[in-house]
Structure formats: C-alpha cells, structure tokens
Image 1 (cartoon, one colour):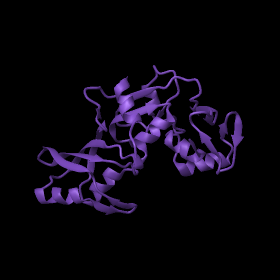
Image 2 (cartoon, one colour; image 1 turned 90 degrees about the horizontal axis):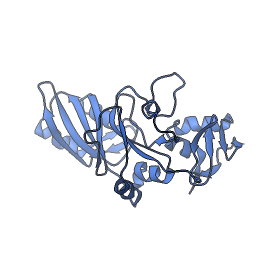
Image 3 (spheres, one colour; image 1 turned 90 degrees about the vertical axis):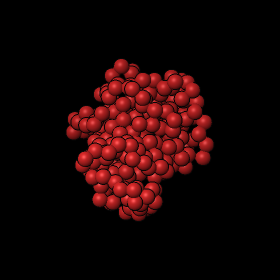
Image 4 (tube, helix red, strand yellow; image 1 turned 45 degrees about the vertical axis):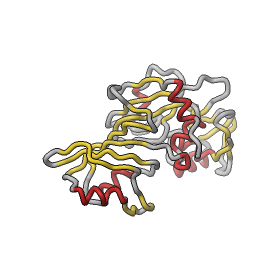
Length: 241
C-alpha cells in the first residue's frame, strides 16, 4: 500500500510527522537508493527500501518478518535513536539483528507493553485508530476517586485536541493518598491518558500498558522481550476496520 513518506517515517517511530517532513526537505530520506526531497512522495513498506540518514526503516522484500513484545521500563525513548544520546528501546533488543521499529509509542516516563516489528502493514493495523485495537493500562494517580467521580471519568471529557472517553475504567487498588485505575482505550493521541486525568485534577504518577487487544504482558520482566506467538500475530493481523 502506497503511503506518504512522512507518515511511514512517523509510524516507524523515527520522528513526528512534522519532523519527518523537515528530514525529507533536507534530503535525509531515500527510497530504493534515490534521495527524496518532495513531500508528496509515496512508498510501499512491503516493496521499497526506505532509509533515513542511511538507516534502514523498511525493507520487506525477501526479509524475515519479526514481531516482538517488549516490557519497556521508564526512562527509555520509543524511537530508533536519539541525537541527545538518551536511552532508547533499541538498547533493550541488542540480540535482535534485524532492524525493527516500535509500533506506536509509550512516552519516556511510561512503562509496559510495546510491540516492535519490521512489518509495516501489521504496525498500521495495530496502531491506526480506524482498526479500533484496544490498549489497556494501569494508571496510578494522586488522590482517591469517589464513586461519583468514577462515573464522571467513565463519561470522558473534552481535551484541547478533541473529546476523549475511555472504553472502560475501574478502580484496581486504593492506597491512602493514591489509587490505581485500570482503563481501556482505542486511540493513541499523544499523552492522552495523562492529559485526561490532569484535566480532572488527578496527576498520573505511573502509567503501565498491560495489554494490546487480548495480548497481555504477563510476567515478562521489565527490559526483557519475547517473540509473539503465531496465533497472536494472526489475531492482530486479521483486525478489520
């Protein structure tokens, strides 16, 4: 499927779409060995070799498809590299020789389940909102939620970039000065869960993604990864919009 290069680069976790546009204009992106500078250029991740600064981000032709589930710790960027030298999720998968990219994002301070692959179609099905693939999180917030406030959370709220409403939200555990909430969403706007709770006056102190669809992180230790099972790959690959 042909897609604009800036979208492909953003989906690969290399940079935001706006930053990807700058990279293209600066001549830092190539397709099949040809430098691209036009923003309207499209490519197919299944057929084309796409590179940013010489680094391969897509080469489906003849290569083995890799699907990994990583338990991302705090303090790692969900990107392939960082000009400031901060730790990235690629530092946690040294044993994988194939070049793979993150499926969607977990921000620097968030933890938990992160899928990584070199299959662009698979990544698109998991992360694009139109496929409505659910993501489940545990969020630790300051303060405690009363029953009435929980009902308010379930109704959602308006954020600066549009309305947000979780599919489900429930109290998982209460402490004296905080509580854990379990919520499921089907979208991936930037820091949307943190912004959602902050808007309602409950700062998030910890955020852990524990499942994508019905694939759970289970007992996998932080910083470790495993390969997806064939049935898990089939399940996510067959998601329809």
